[in-house]
Amino acid sequence: MKILVTGASGRLGSVTVHHLRSLGYNVTGIDLIEHSSTDELIDILDLDAIERISRGVDAMVHTAALHGKHYDLNYSREAFIDVNIKGTLNLLNAAVKNGVKKFIYTSTTSIYGTAMNSETQAVWVDETLIEEPRDIYDITKQCCEQLCKDFFHKEGLEAIVLRVARFLPETKNLMINHRLYRGLDERDGAEAIRLALLHIFKQFDVFNISSGSPFSKEDLPVLKFSPLEVIKKYHPEAEEIYKKRGWTFPNTIDRVYSSDKAAAIFGYTPKYTYGFLLNN
Image 1 (cartoon, rainbow, N blue to C red):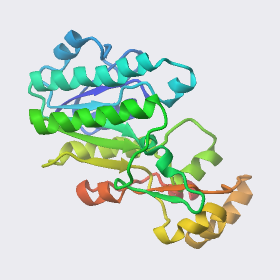
Image 2 (cartoon, rainbow, N blue to C red; image 1 turned 120 degrees about the vertical axis):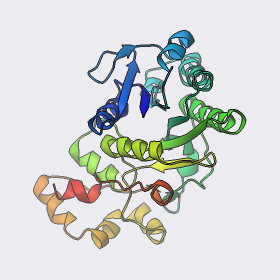
Image 3 (tube, rainbow, N blue to C red; image 1 turned 60 degrees about the vertical axis):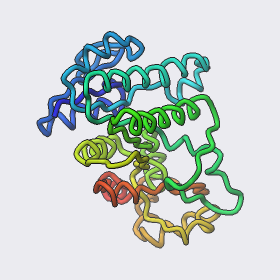
Image 4 (spheres, rainbow, N blue to C red; image 1 turned 90 degrees about the vertical axis):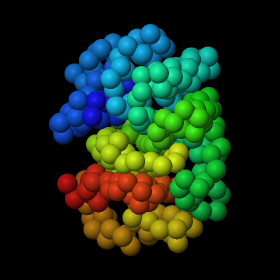
């Protein structure tokens, strides 16, 4: 399988390129920034270059985007629309023109936006939760998901969406806390992409991809106000480990990401979970 990965110099893109190559896949990485995982410096807004690089490709993995951090840096709405929407449209059109069979779009769990707010309990975030975008980043991601759906139904391109969770650079304490309910290790993200590449999707679909959580829906009211009580129920060893490492527990947990659908449909099972970090 010959695979084109956009955003190959980014956190998820680079790990995905190296992961797929290590398993024998023929991978070409493109980005605007030089990196060991990037073969060519190509702007996804350059349609001619995209059409050229995608000839003979079996699948596209699209991770390139302006992200939430760019919103914080005051990038314009026009920039988000150009890169995220027009760039994605260029890739979809090139895929159809060159007979690419599969297109995996990495969206974001941020798209759920204000739907994740509740004053009374933590929110269970699975794919049935209706997204409520908060900003131009979320809006462009939502639009691109719909583009993928349109191309699936009207062009016969097997395009599916992976809504990936948070994988920002942060302290070990914050990282492990986020792995409880809203985080993702890039290595798990890369494996989810590989599994999605292998699966045949008969219909357009969207999947949350996170590190999973030990929690259940029954825990949601307590998680909002007394998360330690619930954490100790599932990981009684956590309190002593946190004490030894000088870590602090979250004061509140406002959401719980579920990747159960991805597990059921194409076998996604995260490895680098809260329990993994706690005991390593």
